[in-house]
Image 1: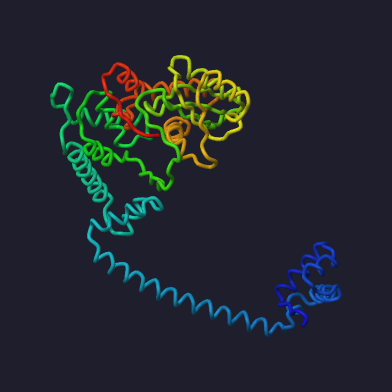
Image 2: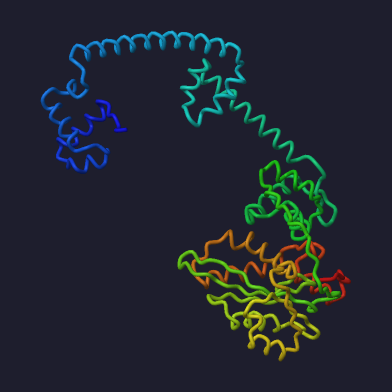
Length: 404
């Protein structure tokens, strides 16, 4: 069945034809015969729009008159609705108290000016600002009360530490390292600042100051390592892996090979380079063995090609290091170095924009130094890994025996 066209559609086609567009192109676009377009064009040129619509001038005049009447009727209805809305508005405003009006204004002031909203809700601007200032003062007072309540903090000599000093230290550590959770901040205060403060106290302070981190949901531990070793001291089991990071300016990837002592959690060697070869992996290993005792050492890696290469295997045999490789797709077997990589990314990589390989290496070196020597680690008695290592060697602590 051929399609029918209303006068407006015909008019559109005719005007395009008059402007010079090809009749054949218009016929294809609108799925209409060329003869029809020629006919509509002729009718329009001879009789105008009335000829196209097939209506007489009298019929068109009657239609326009009817539209005018419809418009007047709609205006009348809209006028009545405006009156009704005004009545409802006054009634609604009468039921709102000043506090409610201020709450609504605060919700809407991002879209409208305060002056407009105050006029709409029939409230003086001076009243609005007066209430706002008083509410803020009360909020600040309540916040301060919450900050300075709870278990007090003491220094190493048992003297009470002013609460404002504790809050100041919390802000300092969170400003320096925005990724820190409340337990790590507590560890820093207890170890680095020589305070005795409860983690619940620090949690409360960070909550009031909106400094708490989103809680990470731990993955279910449904994997059990097939081969475990009883560890009694440092340099018995190392884990080695590789992690990538990005240089913004050049668009290059940096590959970091690193090694962790599972007993002390200390990073014993690392190397960053623009390539990911056996050569780079061996550089990290050579750094690790410089000042460590490798007698009876086990090195655990995944099945990366660098670790399976003949060059790597030859070197660890020369060093008399036992090489243990994890099963395919089981990062859980290298859990300690994987955990360090998570910390590295949150505290260092995601916080920085590396400009060059040199900038990246220097920044990573500073982070590893801080991680080893100044950052308390919860797995080794909440002291830094290098300090724990030294204490074990000097028999200051017995060491935490465990299987890994």
